[in-house]
Length: 258
Image (cartoon, rainbow, N blue to C red; front, side, top):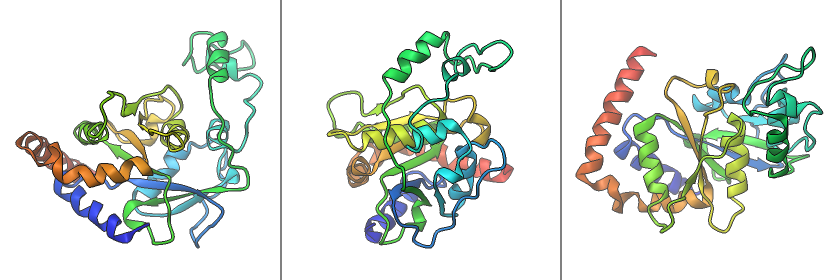
């Protein structure tokens, strides 16, 4: 990571999104760089909950042993095969054996969804998560993840579409919380024209984030030109100044109640 770029973004973020939470990043790597491993969960645990510590500034490494959720193991590239009854688990369940989340109407719809999925293998590698201000010259993040409320998301969404003619600079695919911040943006990072991923609509992951907070995960190669555009974009207009004031007031109120 170019530390001058890191510090430049922090300055611009504080100017145009005053008080808003800094993003976290992850890198798929073979190195640990002295970062603490996330402990093996006792029972089921959502990785989105564990990332609360990263959002507060603690860097963490995640590997297969750090995960207890089969969905996270799939979306992070450690286990390619879905559980045998996944089609029932995601839909209406199976009487007497499988409780259903009822996120899809029928098992057949789940089957079709699985066929359209992509698997990004990461066996033997791990995920290094850092908050943006903790990045070092040795880090090369793949994805930048913002946890934010509507006004901040509005600015990031508009900035993501600033330098492109098509209206799809941000996508919102159905999936788990971890798929929205890890799998889908990592998949986009390998595309010729990557897109940001809006997420955290998964009801199962919602208990792990504050009220009103969504995510926007952005591949790093897309994020760099977004930062380079900040000082010439709508962020310097009177229109954004009105939103900026809302962000500042919102963050001040939030800090007083938490």
